[in-house]
Image 1 (cartoon, rainbow, N blue to C red):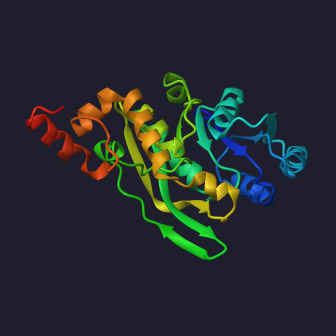
Image 2 (image 1 turned 180 degrees about the horizontal axis):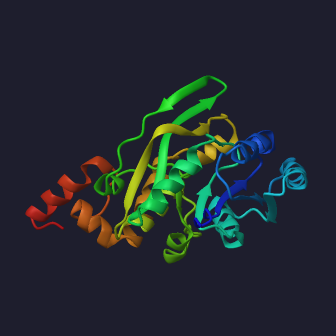
Amino acid sequence: MSNPSPLVSIIIPCYNQAEYLEETVLSALASDYSPLEIIIINDGSTDGSEEIAKNLTSKHELVSYIHQKNQGVEIARNTGIKAASGTYILPLDGDDLIATNYISEAVKVLENNPQVKVVYCEAMKFGPKGKKYWKLKPFDINALARDNMIFVSALYRRKDWEKIGGYAEDYNLGRADWEFWINMLKDGGEVVQLPFIGFYYRLTGGINSLRKRTGSDEAKRKRIAYLNAKYPEFFERELNGPLRFQRTWSKPYNTLLKFFGKL
């Protein structure tokens, strides 16, 4: 008798995404993988998100709903994962979409390869101006020290989320997925990118797209300072010193400073 398939928990934080939430949830429900649970976390929305979420829970037994005051997407994700029962976690923002085979193919990799911590796929950006292939850089731990190449909607084990203490709730500087992947992968673990488009990242041009953008130089400096303070050993190992504002030049600059005894 074969072992039952592991439960996958899809965690959907939602902030004023009423226009897209149902489409996002339906794309998750259309997955060819089972068993699934889908948890919507309403992060204090002021639009019709709550009504739509409650309607979805009444129609679909796989969908559940949590409301919290507005605290940010990192806390919303943690809230959802704490309430989840799945072996594997898939975060999915309240306006993005997944392909039907994404979860099933990712779970196969995770089940067959204990050394793999993260599985993602190829991706497409879409919005009012059409679709565009999202060309992601190949994963490399040294490259991760300089920039992120894994979008937030990758699958991973709940136990790995627990080990690192979840998403950093004091990190509201943008690009939280980058910080999360550094934390999860800094001490090892393989990453696999599936060779097909399984994730669709929506560009709306509204407030939620603004929340996804990198932001100003000031925000970038704060983000780099946060990462350097939290992961000094990681950056020392990968970049021979701290992450710099000109991230691509971090390692050669640090190496030069050390050569002249300035670092």
